[in-house]
Every structure is written in structure tokens, then in C-alpha cells.
Image (tube, rainbow, N blue to C red; front, side):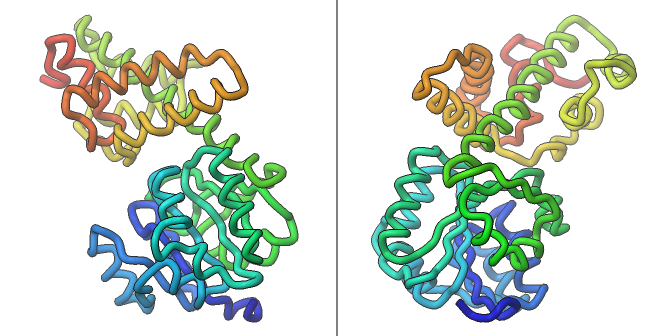
Length: 302
């Protein structure tokens, strides 16, 4: 490992969350290598800021001291690690891999074991908050693994995060991440359904906003979702409905494996499935309201 402040950093997954995190790493002076992305715009932006582009994940693993993975979900993480020209083929003794995606805990344990068998070191380190905080460098981080290992890479993590919660051994952070996402996305699903029923019932949406925000049902998520019916603004939660479905599915799989009853999560996922069937797969989560309105035969706005 190079001396602190000179660690060579790799970043896989420079999409909406990853771009902001990577941008802050390179702008705060760490040598940064990124892996190509189907959307070239964030890649080219980071190169202009001083990053270099690795040809393969294997090359990145050979050249970097710390590698962050921030991709869509478990299949993508496993492809990055185990696939042809993947990270595992290039892991060097002491290399740190920090897995920041939303992924299944059992996969996390498998990946950690494989990396450690090659002499590498592993943290599961999922993120909270939104692309806005990623760009600002104020994400939240939860982490599972050795505290000393997190302390070692903390100077890099502090480039893009300002909240750090230790969760226990490897895998624990991803379990908490799935619970956190069910709470936030399940809440969003309930709010969108409530707003749709209100719309169908002829309720004045501004009146609904004023009543809820002055009482116990108020929440950050309610205020984010209500931007959509009030202002036709879906940027309150810039997260695709297809990814909402994925995260609820991961939570349900975790619950089933325990086993644990999770009826509310199943109901929320059914609403999201209807929205996907109605063509809202790539829309942001607030558009679940639009989908539910139209499935009930009304327009979401006048």
C-alpha cells in the first residue's frame, strides 16, 4: 500500500452515484483509475478532471491500492469480480476492495472470501443518500469488516462521504442497506399510492401537502414525492423504478432466507411491477404516482 495521501484508487461504476464519488476522489488529489462505462459522458468528464481509464478490471486491480465498486446490483458486481478480465485475476497482496453497490449479503461473503484467498482485503461499504450528495461529497457510508481496514482507507472515503457507520463483520452493512432501502422505497410506494388515491378522489394536492406536512405523517420522503404531483418534478428521488424493484426483491430474498415474514415488501413490489409493465421501467421513483394514476384511468395532473 502506498503512503496515505498517495494511494492509487480504482473506481468501477461511474454512473449517477459513482460519478460524484469518483469526481471528489480525483479532485482531492488521489490518483484515480476508472473503468469504462456504456455512458461515455461521465467517463470523459472524469478523464478531463485528471482520471485515467483502465482497459480492464484486471489491469485496474494490478495497478491500484484501493478499488471501489459501485454498480447496479449483485450480477454486475459478480461480473466485475469473477468475469473474464475481472478484478480477481489481478488482485495483488494487500489490495483493498470496497463494495459500494446494493447487493445480496450471501454474494458479498462469497466475493470477500475469493478476494481474501488471493491476498486481498475486503469491506462491504454501501452508500446512502442521492446523486446530489454524491456530487457534493456528502454521501453516507455504512461498512462491514475490520475497523482498522476502514481507518486505513478513510482519507479516501472522506472525499465523498461525511457519515460513517460501522455495522459489524463483512456482510452486515449490506443487510442493513437492504433494510434501509426497504424502509425508504416502501415508504415511497405507500406515498405514491396515497397520492394516486387522493387524485382519483378529487383531493386538492396542495391541501394534502399542507395537511400532511403539519402532522405526524410528514417525512422527507413525502416531501420528495409530492414534488411530482405539485410541480411535475421527479428529481426528488433520482432512482429508476427498475432499480426500486431490484432492491425490494433483494430485501424479500434476504427475508425468505432467514426466514422472516415480509408481506409489506411483497405488496410494495407488486405496485412497482405494475408500473414496470406500464412502461415506467426507466422512470424515476416519483413517477410511480403517474403509473398508478393512469392504471386507474386518470391523468396525474390537470
